[in-house]
Amino acid sequence: MPQTSPHPTLTDRAALAAHRARADDSADFLHEEAMDEIQERLIDVNRRFTVPAIVTGHPRIWSDLLPNARVVADDSVLDLQPGAHDLVIHAMSLHWADDPVGQLIQCRRALRPDGLLLVATLGGETLAELRAALAEAEAEVSGGLSPRVAPMGEVRDMGGLLQRAGLALPVADSLPRRVRYRDMFRLMADLRAMGETNALDARHRRTPRRALFARAAQIYGKAFPDADGIRATFEMIFLTGWAPSADQPKPLRPGSATARLADALGVPEQGSER
Image 1: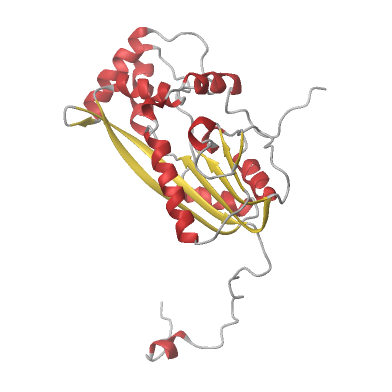
Image 2: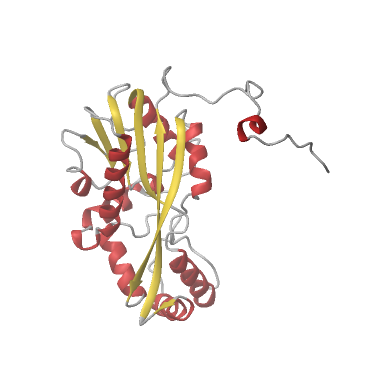
């Protein structure tokens, strides 16, 4: 019998590779902001990392982030050796992973004890306006829907992924970015330049009717105006987690406190009421 993957296939990897190969440097602003955020977080950590690795589908952009960093592709099986790195950065690729938890587990295994994982990825609010406009237009023009924008994780769920991957001290936060475009077609041109156009495995392979995008542009302009253009939302999510280590701080067991909060605050303790 043929073997099947335990995880559903989200991404057509051949299509994604072709889109990335056609990308250029005219729309790298999201990567530049992500790199700035990563650098700031590394400064806040205040630790010297000597054997970093960067996992990314965009090596042209990320390979110069850190000196001597090992740069590997965001394949389903990462080319990382267990315990080889004190820092792993997963850079703007996790939103295309069929198995994001599996990617994080592999990163955690590649870390030395108390090594740091930093992730920059796109979150669930990304392209919400485009998703809505295309869905409404397709329902009108074609009488149905086709997957056209990749589903992306919500920030409230991403911290849980770090815990499932076995990482300690997990933190997840988001940085929304609103961008003004002349029209929907200018936005789509930027997505092509980023290598972020539709590579969903479940997408319709046939060429869509020209009327679809013309109608979507009308809907977009009316529903999401921004001055003399339209707005587009990009949500960047940043994840931080540490490989477990015996000398990391750990939360106290419930009931192990030796002093009362009321005593520390210098106020009388109040009984609970319903």
